[in-house]
Length: 204
Image 1 (spheres, rainbow, N blue to C red):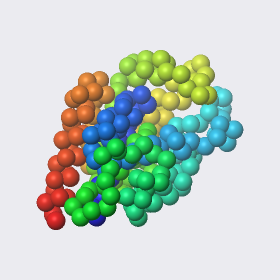
Image 2 (cartoon, rainbow, N blue to C red; image 1 turned 135 degrees about the vertical axis):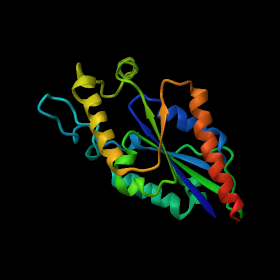
Image 3 (cartoon, rainbow, N blue to C red; image 1 turned 120 degrees about the vertical axis):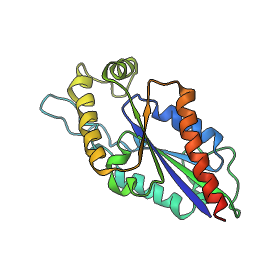
């Protein structure tokens, strides 16, 4: 049984979830694990000196639970596809020789968590300039909602900090311009994945 793990990370509102879903819908035997589903309860997340909730840090996430779920996929992808709560590809088929199972890990801090980053086969990182990113973020409704000044006071500074830390430790990142069309972004990632899938199949 062959396995491929793809990481799709990047800036807030950069298009990570949209891209991950588009890839998932066309790649057989694939599943998405989204980092956003592992946030701790709001009352647990600490507040900084400015009164901003510290959501853009690893401590705001149950990373141990996320790794536990990913390890379950690594151990038995077919059972994971059947049992896990994540959205699974309608093209999924039972365990057979020659099948490659694909896990798509999506999230804003996936490359900053070393145990998670180390298991990935391909890494894609979506970027956006400040103004478009702020515009997209402010147009969305979050639960709980972003307080006034949250983007400039917490979200953007933490993005820059986290990106710097990531770039100091992570190799083989493929940067994607979030200003490009969905079709262009999709093609870049899909072509990279299909190339790797073919290599795995040819290795039979």
